Length: 358
Image (tube, rainbow, N blue to C red):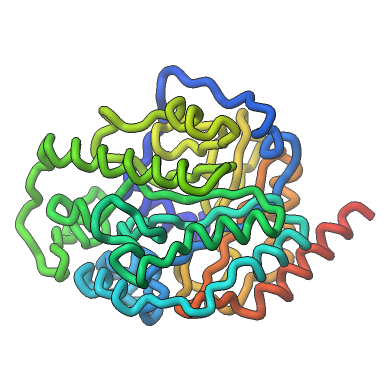
């Protein structure tokens, strides 16, 4: 298992990761067939307030982690991390440029982080007080991305994290792996990374409020921006009682495709994070890979450098052999700029894939 895959597995333990649900019918909508009929390339864009920090990974940069400290990765307390919202101002966020380049290279779809685990909504949400409505003068980064996607001719995907560490901060530890089987000596830590003896049990009132918050924000995303082609959930809720269902989502967006991380079921399997299957999966699938070099999904140290072309080509070949899709992640910096290496790497991938057919 690679270091990235091992890290992903540990992260899934924290955000929650359902694995089964009894009854489910995958979409058979004609408008969703594009995802299942061929091997698609997708562009994953991890972007948020962490980009305003120094070598701070999105959300995970607020989680105390001795292993990351030993590697020299940047870590802030949650209190310090959330304060980055005051500094976040990507003046040169121009997604049309890099989305158009992806389309020219043969990409089919893109997925943008509308809200990560840190809780910051990248659109002016009417829900809560932690979105661009309260910062950046109400700028709508999700709207800008959606418009750019359509202009480039790409299918529109949105990432949304059901886990929300700002809302759940009273009930969770900000030390990675606290009191786990693997790390029994790691203490619980609060939002200042100070040890605490125990965590309070989450109340039913809070679970209900979290569900209502989640439902309202998901409905905003599915009703404000026209057709959304793909919804990429990451993690689950403290309780799914009363949560919006995939059938509710399809009523709002009949052509949408939804992954399997919220309920344990979905239109396709998105479990191959930073890893590849060794045999053909039984259902439609996608692998998500960090395309740039560095210690996280968002803009961190070395995010302006990309992996060797041979690695990415191999990932594509496996996806094609086993009938899956390849979602490659990029990370704009604090100004919203994607490094020049992205464009040259993109061109090389286009040429390498073209050579496979010769």
